[in-house]
Image 1 (tube, rainbow, N blue to C red):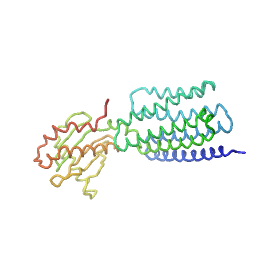
Image 2: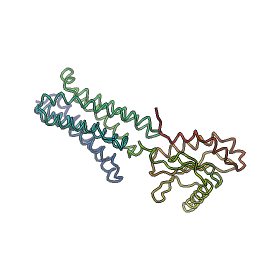
Image 3: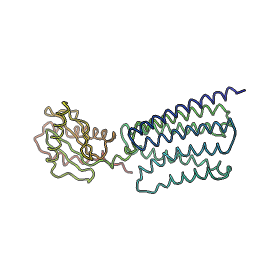
Image 4: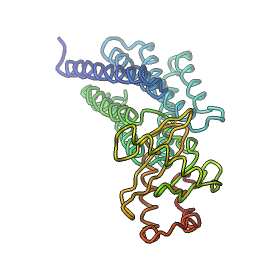
Length: 346
């Protein structure tokens, strides 16, 4: 006769399996639509954790076969290794992915070595988990806005996931009882959902390397370019009036085509993206327009441009109220604002 605890464990396993497969389907659907690597990796992670839970259950309640242990740990290790690969690939594109290689070596060793050695080597999975945490914290420092909020949620989800894995560990279950299997599975599920949906909100790992996508920045007022700066070259742009006049004309045409009172927030031209923000304050019955030229349209760059324009308006409010056409005050005193588009160091 099946005990109540085992029945509870089975119910929890079914719930966890179904929800993780639902998550995998959600990420796969997003990948097929966007072809972003992040969605594919999240699909792999969700499937690996789901199947790992099944092997964990079989090892505890069906037969304690070493093969089940190997598969359980290897699949979890694959999940963490996928995260490590993702961060190493996007964070250090020109460096050898040494942590990913070490994780793969541990996976192979766990699968091939004698069971006694493989069992103790399985604890190296916590090293992979710490590497993921380190990458998340480092990424948090270099992001802003909604992307940063999602990274915070991912870190919290990672801690919850780790807690669930700890609660369902062999030694803990032997001490506390088999009900901890159900508790651990549910806690892991909560952590995975929070972690996965946080990255689902980010959508692309390019958000982590936003600073590589930025090219030029313009501030336009009454069709006059007040400020033109190349963030890519770290210098003021020459012939700013020519650039500003051309951009103002393009925005006016786009606005007319859309039959709108405001310029479009995003324009694609050839291989470049133009992110546009309209100021919130009026000067002489007109608003400032900021234009950021980037290689890829990312949500974090929209937020950074909005932050830049708000700061620009407040810093030069008195100048703009009494503006006579002189652009020198903007060129001389805007250097500090460019830091918004630079990577934090230290």
